Amino acid sequence: MRLLERPLPTPEARDLLDLTRQIAAERCDTQTVNRFEGEARFPREVFDVLGETGLLSLPYPEELGGGGQPFEVYLQVIEELAGAWLAVGLGVSVHVLSCFPMVNYGTPEQQAEWLPRMLGGRTVGAYCLSEPDSGSDAAALRTTAASTETGFVVNGAKGWVTHGGVADYYNLMVRTGGPGARGISCLLAPAGTDGLQAARPEQKMGMAASPTATINLDEVELPASALLGEPGEGFRIAMAALDSGRLGIAACAVGVAQAALDVAADYASTRQQFGRSISEFQGIGFLLADMGASIEAARSLLLDAARAKDAGRDFGAAAAAAKLTATQTAMSVTTEAVQILGGVGYTKEFPVERYMREAKVLQIVEGTTQVQRLVLARALTS
Amino acid sequence: MKIAVCVKQVPDTWAEKKLSDSDKTLDRESVDGVMNELDEYAVEEALLIKEANDGEVVAVSMGPDKAEETVRKALQMGADSGIHIVDDSLAGSDSVATAKTLAATLKDQGYDLIIFGSESTDARMSVVPAMVAELLDLPQLTFASKVSVDGDAVTIQRQADYGYDEVQASTPAVISVVEKINEPRYPSFKGIMAAKKKPLESVAAPSGEPVGLASARTEILEFAERPPKAAGVKIEDDGTGGVKVADFLAEQKLI
Image 1 (cartoon, one colour):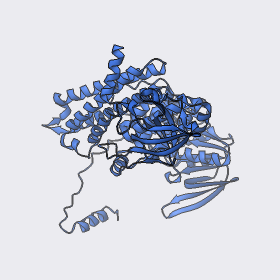
Image 2 (cartoon, rainbow over the protein chains, first blue to last red; image 1 turned 45 degrees about the vertical axis):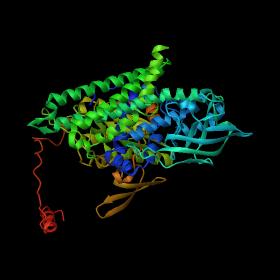
Image 3 (cartoon, rainbow over the protein chains, first blue to last red; image 1 turned 120 degrees about the horizontal axis):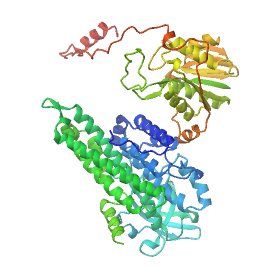
Image 4 (cartoon, rainbow over the protein chains, first blue to last red; image 1 turned 90 degrees about the vertical axis):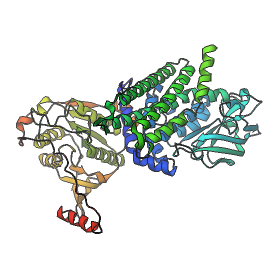
């Protein structure tokens, strides 16, 4: 349970959260999650339901086909979904990230062609920045897009692509100019384009149901209309998208941490040892208290950053602080949850071992913990 | 085609329910209220019929103040307007008083179909749809697992132990549905936003009929907590386990 009631600005937001919880309970129940995770199968049908109900485009303007919801509300939807199933919560966050370049940098013609599909709830997108040899040092990417008479021809490989192989379209950060950040442009490629091929998904520690794959690009021809923004603007687009995306990952972290605390608190109050429930021992009770307090702190920081974004204020550093704090919290809370459950916590009989494995990836994706510190240190000293 | 769909707010199916000590009626304040599950199927069926035949769907509910949430849920799913019958005098009404209240509200409003879920998860009596049909002098097509509308003829498959009966009537008619009939939709986010602007009328209990606890034809004299679950029977399999399980099931008249 939560120490603070969810802060929601409108009755509709409350109904939206109720709807999210209902879908999470009915479509992301433990049995379904275990089956799909066990089979490493992407739950496309869950995304179809989320699309039909309008949950895949919440933070984008209504006039473009989105839900027109503030980030403050959207992130709490992500949190609920991630608590039920990280592959879904993170998947929604990545899909929203994949719409960002088109919504913010697309021309009216490009938007007319793409946004009905992107925000209409029938597609899932991917965002390709990292490469096998450039992760945190993203501006060193090497995939090239050479100009042709009709557009571009792309060669290279993008790594660690969430939804690689199942996405309907890919945002590709590619080099169209010289070295460094200014030589990078953003292209949009539909799945099925000749030469665009997903490799076998990575064998990950967790989130098996969310495929992560290298996208190989071999003589991929794209029209001039695939370019989003100006040539050379790609890195700026990628970083701006990540500022918002990081808030999504922070929301996922809060959701996973809350789910772990819920299981741990429930277990501690029913598990009897030495003639009493183990929650009555201070060693456990204080642990639960610290877990609850740290989750509330992470959520408050996250929502403060979201409100700054909603108000049009600069929020990049706040997003980095929220991602740093929330993912550290998720890692420590899920680890403690396994400890509180003891032996059964280490088994698949309870979901806490899954939460612990899921928490780890959140400290890595969309900027590692160390990259967030880099962003914060720069903000503090600039 | 004008369709009324009757919905009821019930305590959350999974919550522990309590009867109040003072008047021995269900304590509806202490637990979360949700739309009766079978009524979601009724709303879905009403929406499907509307989508295939044009027309409008009006969600109707009788219940205390917070039952308005359930009318709103029907609007979020796609109903066009709502009527909430809310009146202190209705508290404690039994099924007869409920049926009379609903019938008086629905009478002479031009409804072609009045659709119900076949029972509520709190009272589980399955009688209100039939009572409303009787009071309105309309044909009743109850326990429908399939509904087809063709002009002013409506045909249902009436669920039975042996399969189903086909029952036909002309509109206007009253239908109750079972959960096999469809897969209720989730409200969409656009539906949630649109529901804000849809008309939702609060009306008082129609006058002239005795309603509420005092008029109830049934009376709860006493009630007790359900006894704790008894320990189960443990059968050791020494080679005759299958026979013993079969004997046990036969003893319980399950096979």
